[in-house]
Length: 218
Image 1 (cartoon, rainbow, N blue to C red):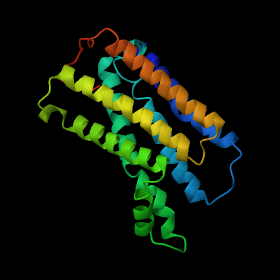
Image 2: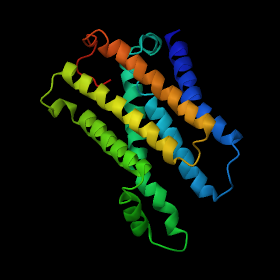
Image 3: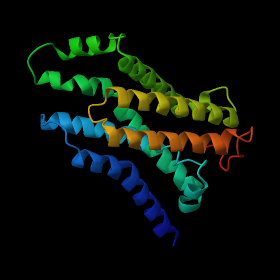
Image 4: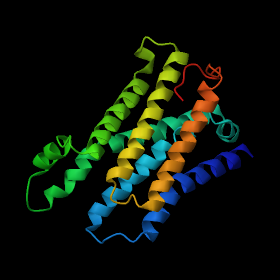
């Protein structure tokens, strides 16, 4: 029974955080462009949506803990998190990847121009989100080496995650090629729901829940 429940929870989660953005992309009326550019866009969008779902796939979500059990939930949280952070870490480089196949400025010049365009609010937000994500990923990998108690690290991790998804969502809506009304609303729903859930369950009472597994990072 637990296997069926766990499988159902994972499939419903993937259907929501991957299926919904894919459906919007399929139904959206976007100008045609090279297939490899669309593939890069889809990878970025899915990685961002799945990373947003990380708040729901943590022990702040009692339904997720019941459906998947804490240890399995932690494994899902970590696996999805590391994969998505890895993809989004490459996001700036993926944006200039098409320059290898097109005439004009080189990929290096395009990347430098992109990262030095501080007059663009969307670019600045993207750089901030990328740095926040890098800190989140690094502190997760090396959590046991940090001079923080688990409770303090978890609060720090949660706060950084909230900042990341807010700034990242703003960046995606401001600059995203596919960020039409439907996709923007989906981003806002994912982000808003996750932030509210985290604030209510973790911080509203003034203290963190007692962790079930002190040696894990979820």
